Amino acid sequence: QVQLVESGGGLVQPGGSLRLSCVASRNSFIINTMGWYRQVPGKERELVAIIRNGGSTDYADSVKERFTISRDNTKTMFYLQMNSLKPEDTAVYYCNVFAFSSGRGWKDYWGQGTQVTVSS
Image 1 (cartoon, rainbow, N blue to C red):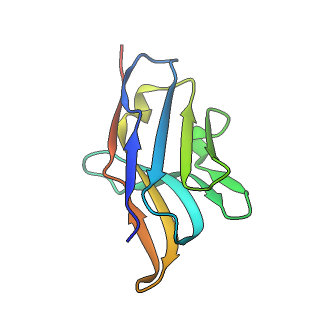
Image 2 (image 1 turned 45 degrees about the vertical axis):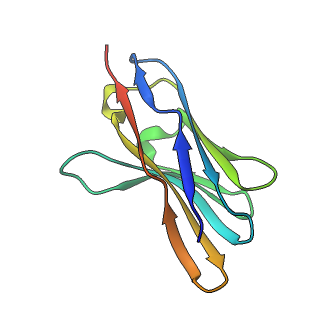
Image 3 (image 1 turned 180 degrees about the vertical axis):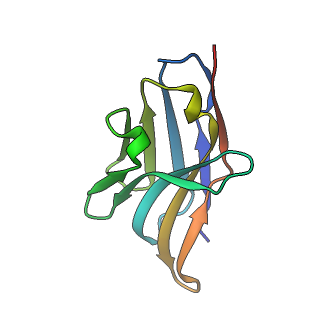
């Protein structure tokens, strides 16, 4: 089973920056996509950014030009650099991978979530 551990959330003032990290605990799997999602109370979880196996990326319109998703060369760690943060970016952020492992096939895996609060 793939386990994801996130870090990097916290409290930041509007206009500030944060970097979220996500590490996969197991490397004997095949990853198709790595992504970051966020959720606020009473709303559905939404996609923030995604990076595919080939390296292409997509972003929610609300974060384009401010957030950047990247990964390391081993493809077991990935990041979300968040700049020019706004109060509306406040949410719990979850990392996600869609990966194949023997015995489980293709499956979504989620991190535990990290709180990001943008407030003065």
